[in-house]
Image (tube, rainbow, N blue to C red; front, side):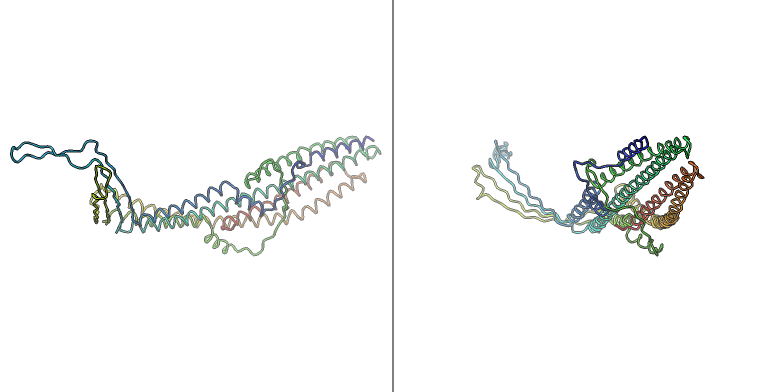
Length: 442
């Protein structure tokens, strides 16, 4: 009866340790693709990147505005409460006489048009730079997108890893419980000493904190995933997929490096940045050259004492061409031109440096992929050997020729081997996700 009572208590403890979801709300079932889709629609970084891309379009429209005429309408109404005067000498007496002029009410309507005719390529250069900036912003959106996808993949795989680790520790706890029950049975039959039962109990007790820690790590990783994809932290989730190894065959380093140079958003951003700085040289140089502008004005003027402007309406139309020739401003524009050239050279150096580093990163990540795949194969074989070792240790113990220490060592070895296997699978999947990000794949 004591054995049954003990077994019942231990089974109840395992049941309490097992993670359970809230009964009030069914868990949200998620696959990796569904999690990524939610993140792309709800993640704050994606929303900010989308606004930045739209802002680039507005800047392009602003650059085009400099090429179009600027049309302005203005109106002035004046009420002369006391009309102005001017003085004129009397030809007979030579005295100054005052004469009132104008009417009590007057208005002036002006319609002006200003159009740049020639600015030495400043406008066209600005438009080209704005067009490149729009591409730059689009690549920035793609860079944020690939970063979010990588973060979601890592968080998703981490939840899967912690689920597997929790299951491994629970299995070890259940195996140790079965061994404890068997040891107490053998003790009652006089086949083992009380020391063996105490050692089995201590080994079982030492496994419980590992289960508690694995459960806590699972909850933390779930919350991290929820935060990335925009779900309520209190809402339970359930992953559809399990952490499984997927082999990779025939990955070519040269092809991956070439694909990275074509698709990596950060690299394309640096190239676009260099193009913008090259256009900026032309825009800055334009400040040293003459510029030509046209302005036209249509004016309508009327005055009246009784708000009757129909008869006194007068109109005028004028046009002017203005030439601006910069002569000297303290060499400020020459200094700005020199700075623009140096900025462009630095941008080219950054492109070359990133190109070299990108090739190294792709090669390093590919090495990590292959290394993790080798560990998976080794640990997969090791699990079978560890399971056989545990079976043999249990048989020897039941036959009275084995020891409690052999059982404990075999259980620990199996736990470690399974843990190393799922960790290797996790590392392999994370390395593949990092490889996708490195070469610009979504």
